[in-house]
Amino acid sequence: MKINKNVAISEAGSLFHPLTGDFFTLNPSGVEIFKMLKNEKTYNEIMQEVLAKYDTDKNTFERDYYEFTALLRKFKLVEAEN
Image (cartoon, rainbow, N blue to C red; front, side, top):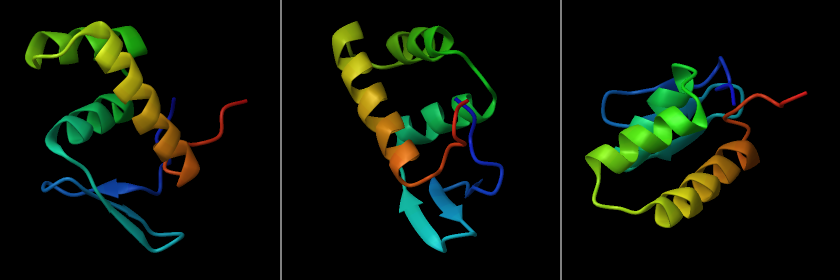
């Protein structure tokens, strides 16, 4: 998954999409996942880091990750995959 190159993230965790003018606010774990995606980490790398840092299990991570990435796609914060 590749983050849309036009999307900017602030230190506070706000996303700005300059083409649409939309702002989004992420929670701390969302900011971390977004930054990992921006750094082109794989799903497995992201999962391992999140499971090591947060008190969560694999099933909860998977559900939350797919909900989060679905929202990124919906609001065009990630580039379309071929």
